Length: 210
Ligand code: TYD
Image 1 (cartoon, protein in one colour):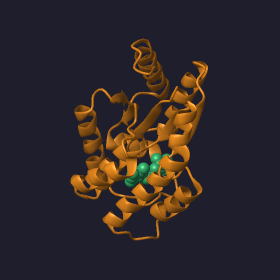
Image 2: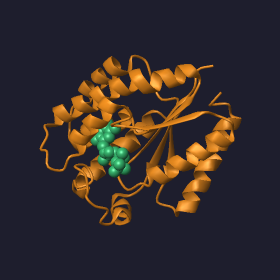
Image 3: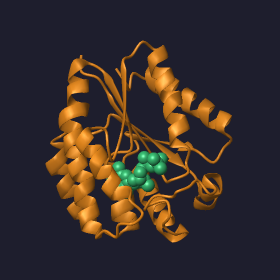
């Protein structure tokens, strides 16, 4: 049987990396083979593109940025995601196209129709089966990030940029309520873990997954 494709999203500082491990642990405890990966990245070419994208010293045009995100994504789908799903593995991916909608569409102002056109072109029908959106206020996220250094090209953007990113993420959750589950990431870490595990159990029982 084909595996499932799960993505994790949220603004910088939402604690995604920690929560990713919770999801991984839960799935593995349920006997599933899990492939962990991330975007931009997940392949040698994707990781090279990631370096370009995050480099603090580069000043990049927003369209170039969008195209590079999708170039890395095409490689990732073709070489990592699709083969894993075909094998029957579950793919747990740290960010996917919702991040492009939120960061390049919301943050940078790239027209959404262009992003959707590229998404169709690159994804060729592949969509996440489930997305967890870790929602947190921008001031709380920033406080948690502290002086995590050196900040990359996105982390160093001002608060207004991250507010726009968060707004688009929340709009997407409202538009795709069946796919996107919102988790309040402003709670204490143990509370977030509990919410996440409850949600996974609920989805499991409702057979959303299988
Ligand atoms: P991430 O791996 O979450 O950063 P970190 O390693 O610091 O936890 O993501 C890298 C950055 O790339 C993040 O700030 C969001 C940005 N990004 C986009 O702007 N568009 C995209 O399509 C993706 C996948 C990421």
